[in-house]
Length: 245
Image (cartoon, rainbow, N blue to C red; front, side, top):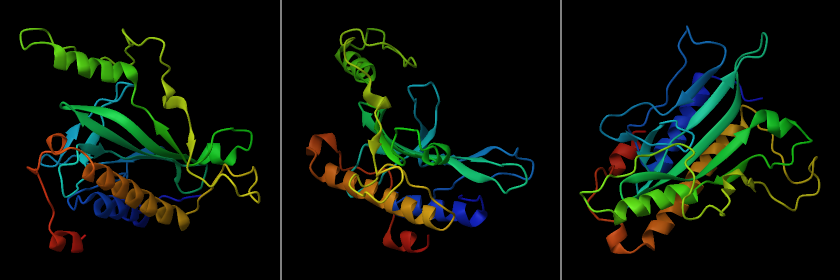
């Protein structure tokens, strides 16, 4: 069980700050009047953040994954906590989605997730933790059609759960659970699919997760054409600023 605490939130906050080079990042905190079930999310930063549009209609606050070149990749974070009877609130679900800026549209690309209940449920066939790759054909289709339209034509607005007009036979594989665990360890029960975290080791896993995503994004950006990654930066934190986090 991963118990809620200010120390845990600080750990998560620090991992996100350092990995994605966003020293002003803040996570929300539950207030004294918060219900037993509450969420911890990215806090709004008027200078560094913007809103994205998820395919389910939600509009999370996102921040850019900073790299030496303009990355065009953005992220958000949400953790759900629940209080069971007299116990302290504990982490039930954590999600770290990444978006790709395509012609100004923040398109959901993938997300890393862990669910405590599913990890405890041995009959579940889904790996915990896992990756979802969620770049839907309909979303890309809308971006392409908007780019093809002239300035005098009406731009198609974002519509949650919209259907693809030209690629209707392509399945939305965002429901596919790509395992984040080792797929060869035979000593696990059930075999090689589940990881239960506690208050001590969840922050360690989350720290490595954020560093891994940041490293892979930087590697990807370094191989992108120059025209796809303009060099003008909105914000580039200094080493001194990072040292203060």
